[in-house]
Length: 207
Image: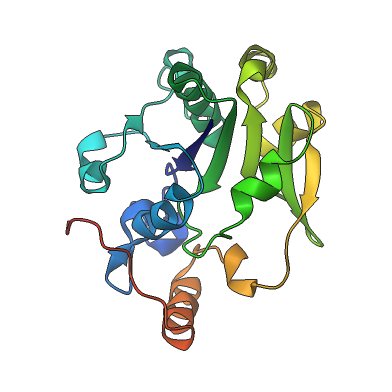
């Protein structure tokens, strides 16, 4: 069994300080696009986010708060990995797949590519380096991951290196699969991709 979690803690500072997960793309929130692409690849899906979970009720997936150990500190996406691992273990999953909320066109073979690797973790790699939000973790390694975080590791890339994660080459056939929405310019480019590729917005309950 494979569980997936969407890392939705981004503050969207370069988009004007908005909740990045809820930024609309062609009429649907970014997180709805990511959820739509990932849901068909996993057996269970959740969202990792701080703040009021009710804002994601329209998705119909559980919302995972940061681990209690984090307190008021912002651990960043590492908190989502740990929260996701504990949730995934409770569901009986063997793997946890993570994906960022700002990747609306993520690859449809992402899960198969990552979970086919041996080892405690796997991560997508491209010519420019690792893509740490696109990763998979063995659920039975949660104690090892927690130990790294307890020792002060807050970087996803650093965590994956400590785990000696297998690097899986990114398929280059679909350039839209690795689009990230970080700035207004990125958002405009994504809007053009929606039109150029004839993509339909996901059908979740309206906000």
